[in-house]
Image 1 (spheres, rainbow, N blue to C red):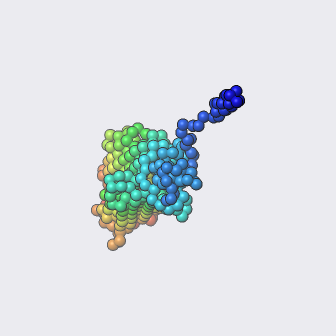
Image 2: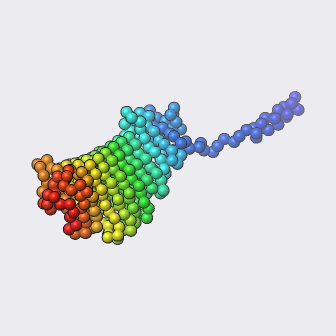
Image 3: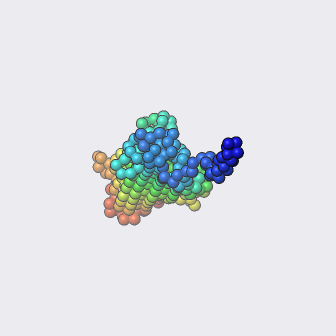
Amino acid sequence: MTKIASFLTLLITALVFLLPAAPAQAAQRDRVFVASYGSDSNPCTFGSPCKTFQQAINVVAVGGEVTAIDSAGFGPLSVTQSVTITSPAGVEAGIQAGASGDAVYINAPGGIVKLRGLTLEGANSALTGIYLNSGSRIEVVDCNVSNFIDHGIYIAPFSATTVSVLISNTIATGNANGGGIYFDSGESGSITAAFDHVTLANNFFGFGAEMFSNSSGSIETLITDSHIDNNTAGISLSGGSASNVNSVILKNVTLNDDADFGIALTSYTSAWLSHVTQTSVPGFVVASINFVQSPTSAFAYSDGSNHLMGSTFGGSTTSWAPN
């Protein structure tokens, strides 16, 4: 019996060594899920989803996707890598930031971040809805960003990088002390942006773009088929230099009842307008709350007076106003 027992012991020991070792940590998944009934102790699979976006971000692979299964609030998050965060049609994936916080903070050098179908709420106490400090590209599609005390969407690459921005079918409203969308390139950052079917309403700035006067970067923005309504200021561009561009192109855009001005340009900024309508509730706006510009900025109307309501400094048919 002793020999048999010894033989069995040796056999079991050999088999154990032949078994594959268990991984020290489970591999990150390309696609993970969150749900109202989830738990952050779960593996974030469809059958066992996480509870919060932050935990899902922690376990998703670089360039992977986080999907909300049902409608709920999934908490603020910090993004440090390429990722897509999305919810399918009919699902409201909410993010409510805490007081003085940001709903989505992005510090992902070289990263591509895509946000789709999200509802971001600031409750008039959180600072910013979407704050990109670094990244190579951000896409915001089918989102609602409301009631932040600073900016709804804030793109501020303060390093010598270029950020590509796409914002489509998105609403930014009620961001009363900042911009619905606001760009700040600092001394060396560059931003190339396209907005399509965007509504910016009841913010302080509808859209603002700011550069340092000694900036080596640039900001170039195209806005099409959009509404910029009922803000304190519609569009404000400032900063830049003779060799560094801060410009906006507006095509099929309506600016309605923006209280202080529709468009203001200062310090080597420029705006190109095509089929732009600017009105106020009482009627045509007057020069002081219409187009405002400094001697170093310029407007160009690519379609003359057609579809242009209002004027520059009172002129009704101006096609170019360099001063």
